[in-house]
Length: 433
Image 1: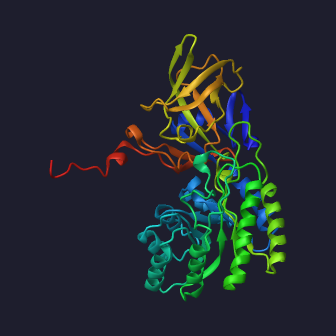
Image 2: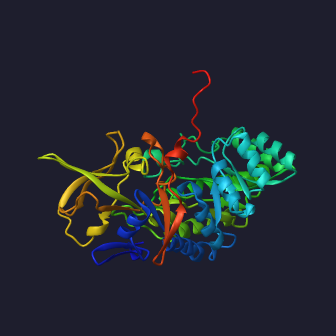
Image 3: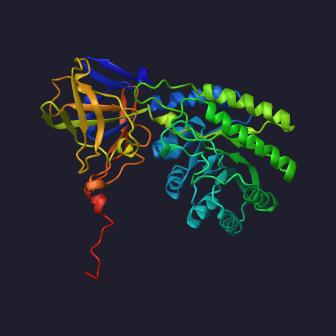
């Protein structure tokens, strides 16, 4: 996404818009999403996956960034979506997202959410709980619908990433355990039901991955079970869902093209399918972070500056952990720039801290800025398009910032900023006081 960031006349531009001027116009803190930054990886996936492999589908993992505007872009691109909550599905309903292009995932779907998904007629329910089938059947009978089911399994593969975002290891809250006495009866129940159609198996190894070995290890295990299902239940697997987790660039990582992961997986699946003696299942992927992370940045206004001689210099901003919890949650690292001093030499090492009453409220440590940086300057942190807005909170009763979409020099609200009144609108003084 470097092509979307430019330095002109000493200022940072993003997708053709002056970030200093944007901050003055819309206020800070402010999430900024680039239309072209979102579109580029979607076009890459279309070219190198959907158009290349028969039956291939991309379902955007909504948890990374879920808004009506994002879903509208996905509709225009013809991309499916994966939702993991009733709230995400509600947003899809609000923009009339084609129900057949929606997948509903999640390790503890509530009865109300399952009812909502079946009523809307989502294209897939991804089974991830041992007690889900009766709930799905109840809703299917209620609405007289037949639902397509993909079963998420736990392949027992530990990927090389932060432990909090490893999801495919054996000890995981996600997925159905790979035990014959557990998995086979569940799949037989699906196959035997007049209301359910078994589609295939899903795995998800983890997040922010830059090598493909864990994907290949996991896929080999999935294909072992494709073989078992054919031999023991005479059940055909129509789809294999590789999940997501493709890495995005935050600092000095080298982002791998999607084909780096997908081509070897497709080669392996074709080979294993031939060995098993079945047609190659249709491949599905669910990227989220890799589509939107680098397509976003966050703008802050510099506030108090404190220098502790011989120890550290702190630059405070008007946001922090409330709009970016990833640093405190799993030590995520970011790069950035003082947007209105973009051409000045970075000769001063500082710690960028937020305004929240927590010592963990740090955005960047040992970050280089011009020594001339002062109160009122605009700081931009890069690659915040994924899990910034999605994980934002009202800690300290601070409003969640708005989101502005930029495109070829134009800008418009994508999400308007929250107000104090909206934070307090559901609070009441109990009658028993």
